[in-house]
Length: 503
Image (cartoon, helix red, strand yellow):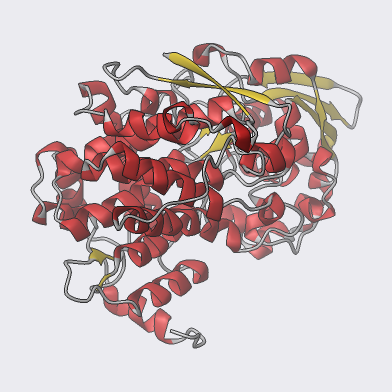
């Protein structure tokens, strides 16, 4: 890996484009060849994972709204792209909008955490839409996915957005533009312009993940992906962009992040180095924010020792700065303890998640968030006896440079009503690559079958999995098979009940 040192430059420096971070990201993308076997296999896993969580969310309102907006935008004379849950072919940016929202809605797909955090799987819907629309093959799509992951992971390692309360989709937009560039084999100069446009137009605050979290949390990545597709289109037509978008004296780093004296280091592969960053990422076994994954597994283990939860006087989770301040009591969001909170808020409330996991010993993407479940008096009482604290050692482990030793969990201290203290800790979720049961292809396939039950027939589940596993060999028409066949009549009936908008 090559460490690229990035800082703010005054306009008088006339920073050469080859020295700009956006150019270096674009160069990584355009030099990406066909991935090695491990990276290709993991890309297939993530295509399966995305489809699993997307089909499970098709009847949820935000997804239905995004689908209705998308299907109002036909493809015109071009091939167009598929919208999951619909027979329509639409313009690719709108397909990315609808399918990206479906993937993100349940907060149930892959993650990467370092200096910042991300869901790199959000790159896949826009890349698949562009590949369909332009008649590319599975091998082209595979190359684009691996390139997007490479860029996304590098940015998350090198540039922290969260401490400045900037939403992480700014990194996603850059990665998606790079992935499209690799997919289409665009010139580096074109991708450079697209990256700058995409970053410039997708910088937003983190209020979408604060307080009473709204449905925009599901839309935000799809919005960034849609903007990236549009940026690539403009760049292909010869349009330029704010430059240098990262290093400029009025640019992203100077005014959104650490200011003119800041410095950043972004590690990127050499031109001939294998693109393997996708192997550093990990998926979710449970439908909740990633820092809650290990906590759910820890709770399932703890309940064997605590007995009935009414005996629990208090639970304190000692954890990292990020977990404490984003999904823990350190966020100081009263909504995280509100029985009437939205699902989006509850999946970012570690006290709620820990309470339900202690009571139920399991976690379900729908039942665990049901309004009557959240309002159960015993649950509310336990929930309000759970707090988090930051532990410097867990913060250090969260930022451990070695991915194999990085920790995202915590240490739970449970005090019972008789004064007995029970302690246990878990560093990573069971499904993490370093966990007790690392996710493998059978686990991804099982997750898909579980979430597709009642939405996709058994025969169509088999057909989709067989197609996904042959991703590298698919011709252009074969990409259609990456959209599981669903009962579009039932979905259309739901869509017909939505209020009308502009489109």
